[in-house]
Image (cartoon, rainbow, N blue to C red):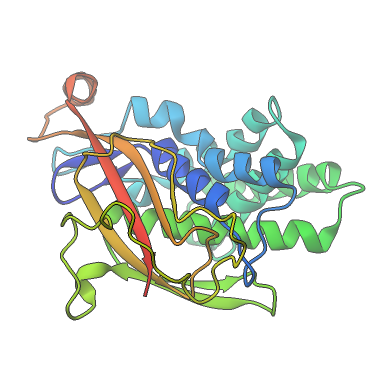
Length: 289
């Protein structure tokens, strides 16, 4: 789960849901849309499927607050990712392959020898299992296409994390028509003269503007892509992105969080409080710079 400074808790699968919404809006003349569309969008939406059980029963940190996904002990972290691709196999071979590749990418810089022998063995075993699974699932598939989609999932993951945390990020090695590019994403308040996040930002009814650079030129492209993941009257955090990778001139995505206040002395109390914590919708609006 993502632990925000304002006491909002966002489940890893909820953050992944945002990535899936972004995937379905992705693509224009400069950035290829996900292809094959549905398996890639499914993988983006479910790339953190392994965290579902862990987020319902979070571990308690030393400060009496739940542990965020970055803080998870290595043995539990490995176990979560070991199970993720297997779960996806019940839905899609292609999506399972991308989830496996995504998990392995997180372990490329992890040195097993930095851990005690039992944990080191678990890390190596996880890597070996996933490489074998990937070889099986990728049989007959286009390797270049798979690698392009792997990098797209990484970019969507980072973009969703930035939105959920409310911060800026640079998405590296994003697949584009003319080669890989970097996309800069930042809260609108980071740009001089821009309204702060949460300010009213929707254009007046009937407003017309020219498409942003890189946006789809087709007259059939929607001006605003909003699939109403959360109510339209929810507080909206505004972000700017360049270059612009979406078909619509503006993209709105969202998820639900829980507001969890206070600290806890044991995991039973933490889990009970989380189950009873009020829900809060989070709405994110992306526009071109």
